[in-house]
Length: 335
Image (tube, rainbow, N blue to C red; front, top):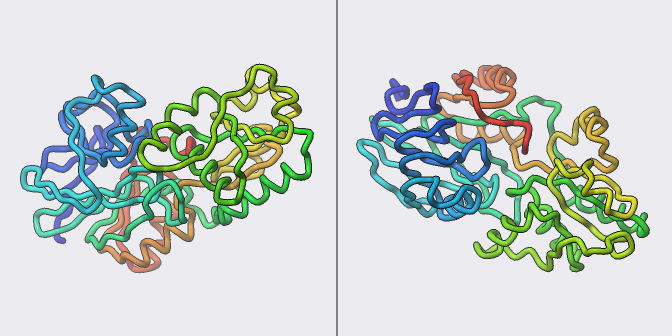
């Protein structure tokens, strides 16, 4: 592909496809946007028209209200749509429910924008699908060799082992409302935890949406009025921001846990006052990032948000042309 920038190039409004006159995950309102997934730094309200998977569109409606996201068009995975001179299709990214890579075909070439992605199995969403392309646009949230995430099932086993060791205490798990909370719940169910899981009020709406979209999560309950005795030996999920606020004081001597890829960094766990860090990430770690580039072998790699320099350097050592796009407005911390 001689000049991929003719098909897609970075702008101050994000990645722009002039052939189809649309942006991908634009940080500001635009006339037409293609959205990779429902996290707030990728899916924002105020666009004139939005193209996304059915699940991502439903998440946007749930978070922002139908009146704020403009005209909505949806595509199933693998289905194509002609937009101007570009052909667009969406393919599973394995990040959260409905997350998609965007394949743009035109001008004799193929560019894939991965959005955020991971290669690990996740019972709450479709697995990442490698898509052959000339240019692969990758995230770089954990693009340093120090980031090698353990299996998520082993982290859940550590949580359940702690619950068994401290039956008089409650285990309070911080998990982001979209994707991480539902994944932790599904992993607990797969590990055999059949008892009710108690939720902070901020998590109910998206958990209910996941279930309506076909992801069973088992019995979920709000905190009871008299929490101290009832919640001994139980598991409670909340947004990370609630771990240390007044709400958590209602709980009986909680073991504070946080499910995040950043929990592999001990200093971050200490800073957050986390007693039991759970290294569960919805982003690709170093091995997944480099393994994906080795598998796809694109002519070029464009690196978006995160630790771009290390991944660009690594790609160069493998004979793959790579550059950082220096896009702004994407949050690599809230994962």
